[in-house]
Length: 252
Image 1 (cartoon, rainbow, N blue to C red):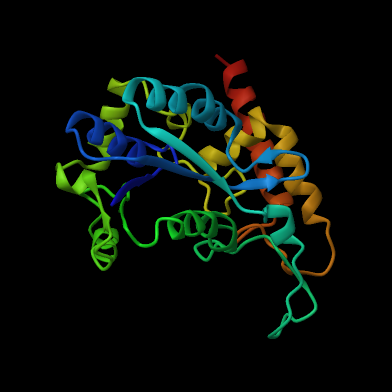
Image 2 (image 1 turned 30 degrees about the vertical axis):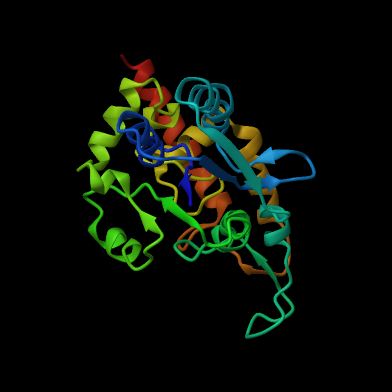
């Protein structure tokens, strides 16, 4: 039997690794499935601060101090390949996919999940997988309980999301993304909140501008970046927000 912790290096998945360490839970591998924006140019889907945290802080600490082996898996597919994938059936046949649809993310389905499944197949079903779902996420826990090979150490030890965040901070394993948001996700995720979009716009304009350029691509099935706005419209709104902030600060 092998014990695996799926880890995105967000607060919940990292907290379960810490709990395994604190309570001497069996754990053979910490497995991270990294989603790429552009494999050819080595551009990760992680916001740069989080990626630096993963490789320069979290992985070294987990391996050297906790003694767990971290395995990084990646798909051969990336955001760019999914964006340009041609639709072969349905009303949008012949068009390219374009931007992923919020809450029905093809990137998660095609780029993040398959590498993890491929790794788990090497274990021939002889494994138990730790999934970071907190005590105050009852609907997700109900779904988790349907697979007997999956458990949540956060549930086992009575940890809420807030408690998981505090535990990570205690060990110096809280990602810097939590300075401006309460979630971590891909920087191109259509489910981002305005605080995340504003951070990307202000601090990583080169990445944001890649989305703006993709907006110009013709024959897209999904013309909007999320369900409401195009990325160009979002850029204009963010620019107005920044101008307002500059005006307010200048008046102080």
